[in-house]
Image (cartoon, rainbow over all chains, first blue to last red; front, side, top):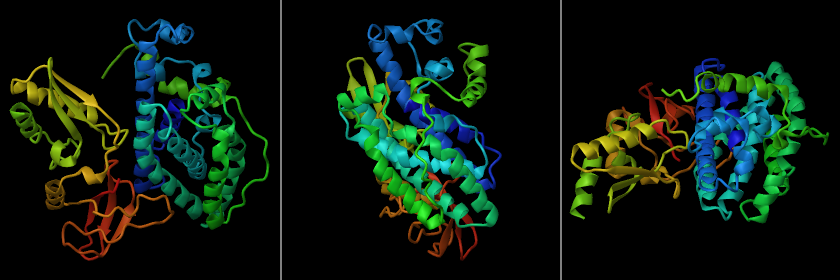
Length: 258
Length: 162
């Protein structure tokens, strides 16, 4: 959850200063900020767990990323020192920024998913994760509405915007299936009552997508062949480039601060 | 009790770095002040997950209290119950209006995910007209939306419902 939020936040931040107009530049940058804030909350909690239960997480802490950290692990170590194969995000969030239509469609797919995920997490047995979800949900209602409205505008806009959004949907659709295929860590979370199986969100997710696509005049793709592997640490080539940029400073100048 | 009252008064002097007309108490982000055996503990909550002002606010709290002889000071952050605009004080809303930012409407109409839903009648903080329209849901900071008044034509920030 943290990796999804961080990487999409980073991708969206690539629009800062490059948005189609000032208002939308600010909007996508604000969404990026929300996502990175959500990622920080999750990473801080993860770091606390690692530090308090070092024995239980011993194999993980043996990773090259953490061997260079003396003392306790913090949120920045988790974001800036792990290698691509240690990230467990969905492939959808690491894909290149693309054009505005691509960014919008991806945001809508992910936000609709995160809204269901956090609603579920909020009801789960882990109090801190529930609190992070409760906080994030307020932001998610803005993300879903904003990105859904843009899906409608682009779909129902000009010939050019329609062509671009159809193209974006075609490219992104194969990456949506992974959202609903539980990984082993999601199954463990389900056993502990932290989350339910993400497969159970798919119907509600599709209904939200259909609501916007119907108004946008866009068909829902019928292919059900899915790209997957992100949650097992098997990524597209795009993640390496993203990490090279995002982690450059901490890798080159370890421990540097503002 | 006397001590915590004094501390609340001192906290009222700390302003939000992004909306300097509001104190952190007006904004409703100070949740608790407790006297502990080993010092003072202040509990705060962020307005947004990614609020970049939180570190500075925590620093200002420590500075303000320690310069008035309260030490050590620890600042704890909690997320639940999540902050909403309902936590803002009435005095705070008046200060916002006087500063030129429209305060959040009392009834929170747009906190639902329906597409193209508009907040009803946001009042212009300059001429008090209700004939205004939204330019963008995302404004100069995460907590504000951008509006324009159709009467006086002035653009203004609206402290959006959350």
